[in-house]
Amino acid sequence: MLWLLDKATGRRLGPMSDVQNKTRAVQLLQQLGLNEYEAKCFVALTPVRKATAREISSQSDVPRTRVYDATRVLENRGLVEVQHSSPQQFRAVPITEAIGTLEKTYNSRVDELQQQLESVAERAEYQPEPVNEVWALSGQQAITSRSRRLIREAANELIFVVGRGEVEGEILSDLQTSQIDRRVLIGVPTEARKEKLQTRLPDVTVFLSDYEWLNANTTSEDSAAINRMLLADRSSFLIGSSTVDTDSTDEQAVFGRGFNNGLVVIARWLLLSGLAPNKSG
Image 1 (tube, one colour):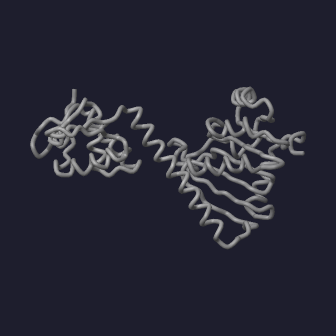
Image 2 (cartoon, rainbow, N blue to C red; image 1 turned 90 degrees about the vertical axis):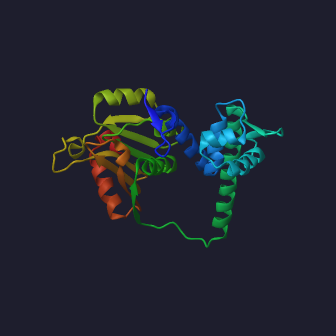
Image 3 (cartoon, rainbow, N blue to C red; image 1 turned 45 degrees about the vertical axis):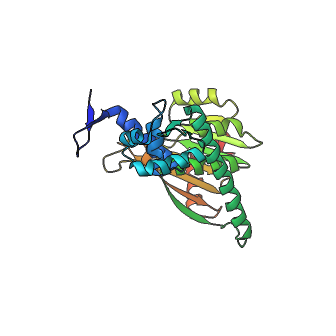
């Protein structure tokens, strides 16, 4: 078993995995609103029935004088209980109770943030949606979020061509639950993926994409592969790609809106040209 040592004192801090878990727990608690000392004190109390300020300080490397400040805050937040003995004893509330308290606080702040942002937006001068626009997007999370918006906003037609990526997770859920009176076409590169996706989405048209430029083998001179393309109502388009020798989390994308937008015009021509006559409508 590997142990982590304190460089200054040579004291064994604990098994490597245990120290890593504690460090990550402290980081997450800080992201949820605790400061460093509060987070360290709470994590130090979690595995023990109770502890004094001296014991908490020893386990957390928080100065003992600051332990009292930190535990006072934790008590006010419903995360720690205090026994007013001599010396004082502290204990963490059960983990499930602590998680529930933190979750309630976090959700409350998110709800308040939404209200405040909506209030700010209501006071802003009205700005009409640009007729033509082009934006660059970076990162799988941002690109998936924009893809989901296109899926939900398409009123009449959605063409979704899958390259290197997969139709799964939240996007698959959106396609399963957002079926309205519109036409949805999904292109995939292989028969196996077509059968699999058609089973999951029986109400949409899944077809083999006939785009040689999409399905061609990537050369060393062209190391990027297309992950996804979406065309919504023939007026909004997104194309995402990533480097072949990495996973799709490094995805980059371009998003364009506007029926006469040059990017959208080219995309519309390319995508519709790859549809069979009975699908291109």
